[in-house]
Amino acid sequence: MTRKRAVLTVLHRLAVLAYVAFALFPLFWLLKVSVTPTSLLYTEGIRLWPSQASLEHYKFVLTHSSFPTFFLNSTIVSASTAVIVTLVASLAGYAMSRFVFRGKYWIVSLLLLTQMFPLVMLIAPMFKMLSPLGLTNSLTGLVIVYVAFNVPFATFLMQSFFDGIPKDLEDAAMIDGATRFTAFRQIILPLTLPGIAATLGFVFTAAWSELLFALMLISGNQATTFPVGLLSFVSKFSVDFGQMMAAGVLALIPACLFFLLIQRYLVQGLTAGAVKG
Amino acid sequence: MASITIEAITKTFGTVPVLHDIDLSIGDGEFVVLVGPSGCGKSTLLRMIAGLEDITAGEIRIDGRRINEVAPKDRDIAMVFQSYALYPHMTVADNMSYSLRLRKTTKERIAEAVNSAAGKLGLDPLLARRPKALSGGQRQRVAMGRAIVRHPKAFLFDEPLSNLDARLREQMRAEIKRLHKAIGATSVYVTHDQIEAMTLADRIVAMHGGIIQQVGNPLDLYDRPANLFVAGFIGSPAMNFVEGHCRAGAIATVDGSTVAVPDGIHLAEGQAVTVGVRPEHVRIVAGPEAGSYAARVDLVEPTGFGTIVHVRLLGEDLKIYTLERGAAEVGQPLHIALDGARLHIFDRETTNRIG
Image (cartoon, rainbow over the protein chains, first blue to last red):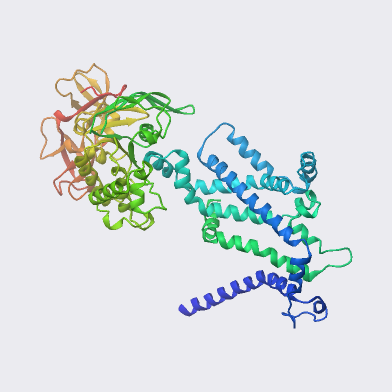
């Protein structure tokens, strides 16, 4: 019995290990290529680690390219999008969860409807709308577009978190002497932190890695975000893999930092959301 | 402390009527229990007093002041919820002091109030814990503590004991009663458990279908139920009902037997009535006597203290509650007498009490 259990545990660990290796290998390869000098990239064949590692690609990317600008742009766009979306979605999700109001059914339907169109279909009309407003080629325009695309889903996400918090808690707080907003702020919000962290994380990553709109709406370097910037390493006749990978590694840093920041709430949040559907 | 007056209160959810024209006045320091089956509107009425539900029509006054439009926070009432509704991210002490902190009470006053309430409820060793680390009974106590720290005008209880197991419920019931004796605050208590209602209430308000069926002290409702609903709802085991018609000065039941009409009651010939008799007022007699019935035991349910004996009689499954052990065995023939002075006669059409 115990032996069977031990064997099962080992098998289970092995399976998990295999999956982790599978998931992390591309990241490792990213790192490996980024530290491989260009001269060795094609000559050494397939090796797990180059015979000679160097940081020359990083140096180049940081000093001789526009990547610092791209990073800044991406950070600004992603962080603003995440914050704005989470703010709007929290309030909207709260209203959806707690209030009965006229037209609620139609608003929910409309939110759902927005999720049904492929993005490609919307690029042209989006451009047509933003262009006269001077919002193409600007980070503000990009934030507006991202917010618009992320709010519906984030609202549903937040609603499910609020649904998971008993209504009695607010009722109790309001009887204890709180206004509805105080009850929201002091009782409900702290309990929704996991949900908020999950939403922040989700939206941040979505905005951080968004390529299509960034590519279509931005043309000048000064407002280019990082995913678009990565494309600049692909030229007509060659791809500079070393620099591209170095930039890719650098791009992971803000995302990693962000998740490090919110991970305390995240695990709890994702499962809570999962259970609630 | 305060009086609560409810005047012509009506409530509809959309087009669904929930409460019809409720009138009730609750005196200062009184313990009133709203009792009724689920869906009778008792919780809605309580939530309207608390300000958590809008009032469709009518008026609620606390101490003579109209509070229809007053926000819950300004009504100065405390409420204990069935789910306890403790704030999960706060310690017991913080839970209890939340209302005082919102009112910007000084730290010393808060500590004093929390300690005094914790002392009353035996919560001292738990003050630093979170609700998650408490048992059901302890959570219940914290919910009560949260209500009493700020000395509100009135306490509202929304089925506070429903989530507890039977023994704990009994214990907390006594504790609530003791607490009310000590504090003397006006209390409105909602429950579907008639035992809770009987044991706790100064006055019971029996509700059914959004209408108040009867208001009175517990023994009034037990001794003189105003209609069939109250008669059937109050008392356990429930009252026996026998249907019959008035024939030649007696009540003829469906199985051809008759029940004598109690003194002082006048029935019209042919009037359809329901006779109610509590199981404890049905006697097993030694042999045939005037007005007794012969029956055979159908089922015996010992409860420890007493025994419930079921017999087939007067066209009904009649229950007898007896304190005598071994008074009956299944299949045994019995002689049964109804306690004539304790019969309840109801008009079958209106369901109201005739006498």
